[in-house]
Picture 1 (tube, rainbow, N blue to C red):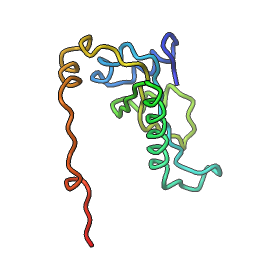
Picture 2 (cartoon, rainbow, N blue to C red; picture 1 turned 135 degrees about the vertical axis):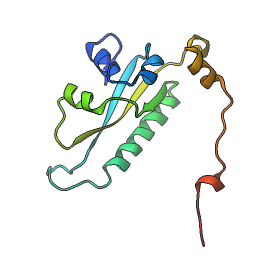
Picture 3 (cartoon, rainbow, N blue to C red; picture 1 turned 90 degrees about the vertical axis):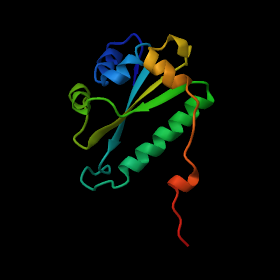
Length: 134
């Protein structure tokens, strides 16, 4: 995790793809979520590593949001640059980058992001995403 004003946040920011960079210019914190693909013995595969990482990310997001801290999980970053930048073990895989901070006025965003941020939200119906057959 890197906080605003540190060299590491600039280095992490530079691994973001351009679309993510443009709306993260003022973020106060960037965090890299890393999954360990093996258990502590270093050889036994952890088949649920991605599930575990997703659950941890969900709980972090829920806790932050309950405290008024905005979050966004991003897959748009250069994983190779992250592995070159951070001292990761061979079994450590960067999964997502998370930005944390306090939301600002959407009117300050670049036009593309402002339009997206201010657009009405909609969700798919459960019947479109949940399949059940008795």
